[in-house]
Length: 403
Image 1 (cartoon, rainbow, N blue to C red):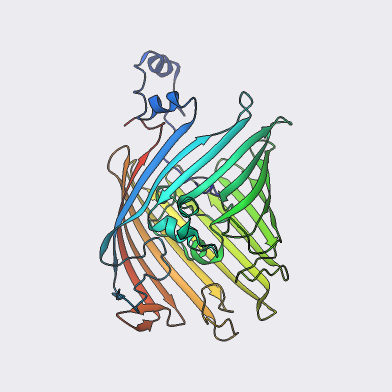
Image 2 (image 1 turned 135 degrees about the horizontal axis):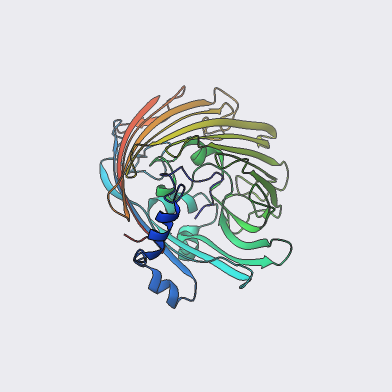
C-alpha cells in the first residue's frame, strides 16, 4: 500500500468517547466480538497479516474515444479507469505484511497487484517490465528492521510506494473513485531504495530517503534521488506533511546524471468534526534540464471535502488546477518545446455507500477541461473537455473486520 501523506478521512464518533461507569461495566460483560475473517490465517502465518481487495468498475466517457488499431481510445487524466463503456478490473491485490516491533525487530512487506491500476503504475518505467512478471505485478516488496534507538528507527529497503501525494493506489483509502491530476502527472508512483523513519512523539515524525529515482527498479543512470518528509500532527483535527525529493532524474532513459529535478509536495488535513473533513495537496516540480538544457516546471493544487451523511453513506468532492505551462508534465507539446503548454482543471463528485462490512460502492461524476485539445473524441479528433461517470465496487478483506 502506498503510504498516505495525510491521515485517513474522519469517521463516525468513537463509540467509547463518553462511556459512563455503568456502560463500561456492561461492555466488559458483553460477548466478545466475532473473530475477523482472516484471524485464523494470520495466526497460522505467525503474526504476518494477510490483506486483499478486489476493485471493479463500469466506466462511461461522454467523448466516446474509439478503440482499435491506430486509436488511443483512452480516458485521459484517468489512467486507472482507462476503458470506456466496459466492465473492467481496476485492481486485485494481495499483501503479506509484518510490521517490526521491539519484540521482533525484523519485518517485511510483499504486495502483488493485478489489473489496470498496477499496469498503469508499473508501465511508467523505462524497464521492459511487461516481459518480467515479477516486476510487472509487484506493487511493493521490501525488508524492514527496527533499530533499537530511542523509540525505534525503522529502516526499509526495497521497492515501496512514493511518500508524496494525498491519494494512494488503493481506491477504498481515497475519498474519490478516480485519481487526481496531481496523482497522475505531478508525482511518482513508486521508488526503489531505502528509507528511515523516526517518530519522536505523537505529533512529530521524520523520514529520510535515498532511491534510484522515480518509477524504476533498475535505474538508467547512476545518480540517486534523496529526500525528506516532515510530518506534524498539530492536534487530533489538524495535520500537515511536507516532502521534498531531489536528484538527477533520467526521464528519457539516456543515462543522464546531469541537471537535477526537484519536487515539493505538501498535504494538509483538517477534520473539524467527526463527520466533516477537508484536505489540500500542493505540488511544485522543477527539472533543470528537461527542455533541451533549459529548466521546466509545473505546479498544481487540489482541494478535497468529505461529509459522512451516516455511518454507511458519504459524499466527497474534489477540485484541482494543474499548471503545466512548459508542457512536460502531461506531454503537451510532445516535443517539449516551450509553447502554449497546458492548464487543466477538474471537478469530481463522489457518493459512497457501504453495502456490507467488506463491500463498498461508489458512484462518481467527473469533468475535466483544458486550454489545449487534450481529450480524445471519437476516432481521431481531440477536444478541450471530458466528462466521465464511473460506478465501482470494492471488496476489502482485512483481519480487523468482523462483518
